[in-house]
Length: 243
Image 1 (cartoon, one colour):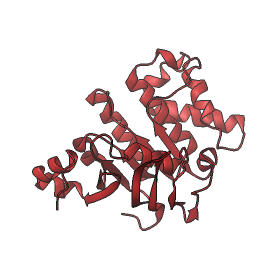
Image 2 (image 1 turned 180 degrees about the vertical axis):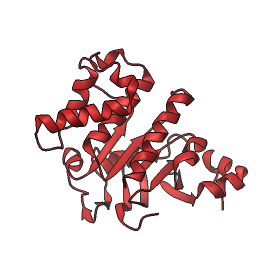
Image 3 (image 1 turned 180 degrees about the horizontal axis):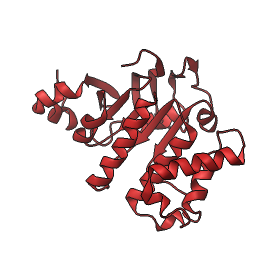
Image 4 (image 1 turned 30 degrees about the vertical axis):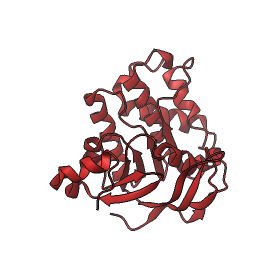
């Protein structure tokens, strides 16, 4: 694991109106490290991603990026500071694949030639997208849309990548290709926080797995530890607080 701490969350609490979802969450992700956040539905994983990315405001705690407190920085500005967020398979359906990627170049200083080179480079990583570069994004399959939203990270070149619901509804062969991209980003030094329902998928790519229950992190394990004790992984995934 690289020593440089890219993302740090300290004492993060909050929710929606009077409903508190998170209770003092602490975590850190280092350069080139992939951390998976697991747990059953409704424990606060997606809420945590929204607060880290600036889509929701916490009531307490801090979010630090590359040593800078960004807790009060708007979400759009966090992209310019090196944070890229993938939530679901969102895309501009009426725009072509190529134009969607051009839209994602907004954190980069305006330079048409550099943007075109970055878009071509992202398409080269995903041959299926390259073959559909001039088609509307609305015509893509679910797996292709996931490729599209991940391809933006190759253009933005973030320091940290947040991915929510990574493999949900995708065929295993598609998930395998997306996992390979995450590995390549890690090799390039990108810190990745991956929200993942499947522990098997998480173990195949993550350096550490964190487990949430009732809005707080209750356990941290390596893939090796969980493979050696399948019952432990099963209890954690089902929401059973395991020692």
